[in-house]
Length: 327
Image (cartoon, rainbow, N blue to C red; front, side):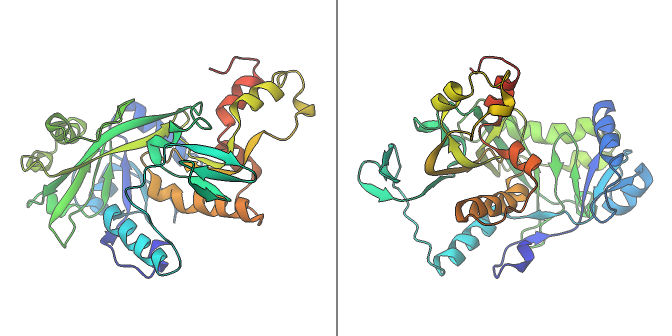
């Protein structure tokens, strides 16, 4: 899909191999293999095949995604914003929105800027408003390291996923990306020397017999720190912003009267797209298409079960269906 866009960004659809580096990860991969997905999407690989396809020895088998790869998020997003600007998008930077208030059928931003429709897509800060403060989302700070290639690392031909990930070298700068740290509940995007070392150590710990892993050099302290937004079930939240108080009131007896439940209470003309976690560039395009279809009253590009799994009110509703209190 990204290749169809008229933008330039560093990338390579070289394939991705997810490795069963310990018992738990191997069991998880076995469950995915049992789904019998089409081979163009996912295929089981043993240790020998993994070495042949990735170019490096790990001693592990796993599951390979032939159509996967890597890309430069900074370049892609900058190019997409520039492209959108040529098609009518107006961007305003350094304008923090601190207040969101209903005004007839629309919304006032900071009590001064009126918009008929508002979409909240501000990452881990999405819960800063009174309308969203009860959503069960949380920040996850993390850091990815940018490292120079070496004779051993340069043999890597596919993205490796283990208890972390490592990309093949970008031919434009001869660097690899290795990461990423994961600090649930933290919202500070600051460089961490400790995270830099941990990114390296995770690779070594997962493949202790592989000599090439020790060539990873993080001493230049080149890295990118950021904050993800995540949910307990690791799925995005897409759709109308749910009304927390109205949901608790109208669904108070949901466990006993599920068949009589009415339409879920939401804020009119207030939408959200968030909680993309660590895989936002994989889920964001489809999530955006779903949201655009909802807002435009067009046919939805997804089945009702998946839509329910993405609904921002789902974690409240699951508890109410069990007769449990929503906290």
